[in-house]
Image (cartoon, rainbow, N blue to C red):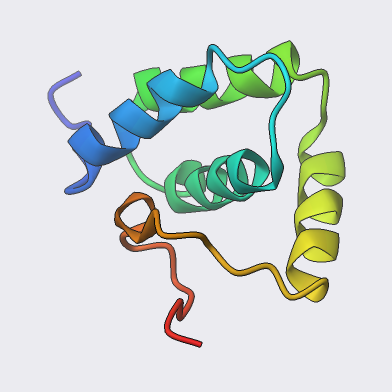
Length: 98
C-alpha cells in the first residue's frame, strides 16, 4: 500500500523477528524482544508483514499476548538485565546501564 509507513528500525527489527520465528523454546530475552516489538508496532501505521510475523511467533510459541505480557512483567520484576546484546534492544525504552 502506498500510504503504509516503514518504521525507521525496520531492518534491525526484521532481523530480530527472523531469529525469533525459528525458535522452538524462547528464553527470557526472546520473550522480552517479542513483547517490545509487539508494543512498538501495535499502533504503527504500516509494517503489516512484520505485524503478521509477530502474530506467527505468538502462534508458534502457543502463547497469547496476555500470557506474553504477564510473563515479561514477571521477568522484569525479577531484576532482568539484558546481557551484552544491547544492540538488539535499540529503541526498546529501557535503561540498560544499571
